[in-house]
Length: 331
Image 1 (cartoon, rainbow, N blue to C red):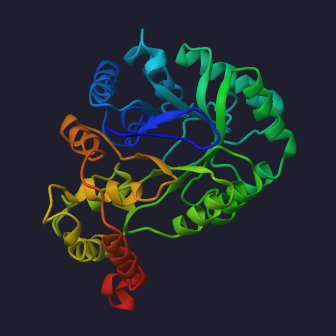
Image 2 (tube, rainbow, N blue to C red):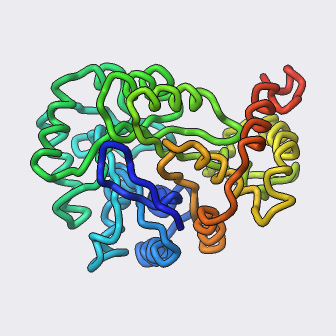
């Protein structure tokens, strides 16, 4: 495993991290606390030191699992969690992707931080992220003064912004990277979905802001396991994707075979190496929900880097929509 440090901080993380949502939110299968903790510990033995969670995952469960996994070695792991959603005063069950109300007042942010510290059973959070923050939150000097206060008090080591897919997207990400002195911007970015990620990278370079990527494998397409016969159960978020997404995706990954078939790489590992070719992509957060997948992704870090020629070839493929017909691309 290789490691990188977020610019403007002393926070060093593994190039491959672990998104705790897969073992706590119930969208990628059901894990008992013991099963989840065991997978997190296995990740640590493979060199993974970075764990990204949020107070909302499983209504706090995503944070509570961390001390169960690492009861005596807190200082050997880097924990990132998130703030912004008020699920404390909104007890109605949340269904699907429906959001809870957000609260960015200093009082709530401080309250939520203390609750996260209690669930994590720690006295500090390594990276504290604004969860799917809209523009009004990002424009709030009061909010960022609160984050600076938490940092100066030692409750958090650094802070940043975690963007959602349709909530807090292009404009918010560019604004956060260019106008706020954040240490971290979490984005969706992968070989098949490069916009608006390219714009985020350009914005991050202006202020030397560290990036982390989730949805690194385009909802599993870049794991190389799908076929035209692949289906998803109704409770799986991928079941809402149109069938054309599957058809087009399979055509696209055929054009990416040059990244992995002639070297010791799987398509899933090549997808991570492509992300890590960007120096400001400090860590990646592939979806991990079994030990086999964990080992595949964790071992990607030490594999041979992609060449600039290969990176340029990927750029050209994306610019040409992987040579799909325009109608298929829009379906």
